[in-house]
Image 1 (tube, one colour):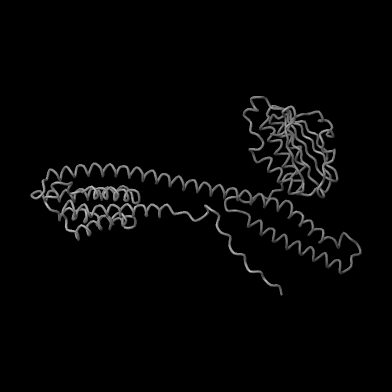
Image 2 (cartoon, helix red, strand yellow):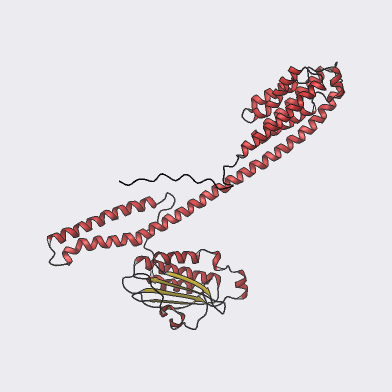
Length: 434
């Protein structure tokens, strides 16, 4: 019994990777600090300048300053609390203080009103903010009219005009800011949905490609194993009972593997896109590909050697896809130039060379360099899956050349047969792939 080493302690977080403060929490904290500051100013102002009793100043000031915080979660209750405190706060004041200083809205109370309607507009929309603003102005207007015998009504009306103008402008700004924030949030959600949809589409395409590879290569090979094992007793004379039983077991295992393969392919299918399980194209389809491109106007000189027998399915598919991508890129990035294709195959490997002449100056200026696309990367990945290599390089005269070596049995060191000097009829050609 081996001793199990104790688990290593978790690594400390790297600098700058700690948990960031939530923007909502930060905004709420800033709002709370602002209201605490306003409360600390409002109460002394009303006690000192307006000669208001301290208990009432503390009570109504706390209610007024607490309303914006309450508006974040309970907007209607906060409106009721704010209107009550806004109407009650200017009532218990001495006549001398109210006649000298702004009344019924002191400057700190007006700032709380601006913060309150701003919070309502940003969090809950302009309708609630407008309703609260109108009720606050109307309520204090009633106070001014009711106290006209004690405090000069003209001074109260002037104060209300100023407060209405300033707070109305603040409300308009808050509504515009809220609209901008909502538009930004919608755009962010749209970007997230687009990114999710793009990821889903890439996943669907990858699952489809995997299903086709499994169907064309793995399932095909297992089918051959099952057929050969099932017919071995009829094709091979003199088999013992033990050998026949062994072949039957192999055939049964292959059938079970095919059943699991069909189940796996069913899992890979998606609701909106079923995997295309038609046989993929291979070396035998390259002449048809060349003819199709020639009919489209491409000038292609092809030197295609007969493919050997027994080419593995993965190599067969990879060779066709590499040739297809190389020719397509040559036609797209160097149109109206001569394209030279050479494919040679022997018992060791399949060798492909695709060249194109230098494109015209105008076409070169508008073309994209090979590093910006995914075609060369895809070709290299396909070649790497079968143990091969793909290289692309610019020629001395400005053309481009792509070479691929796909081994049939194992890793192959490229021989002179894959060198440009051994390609035969297109030896002096210059060109390549962009």
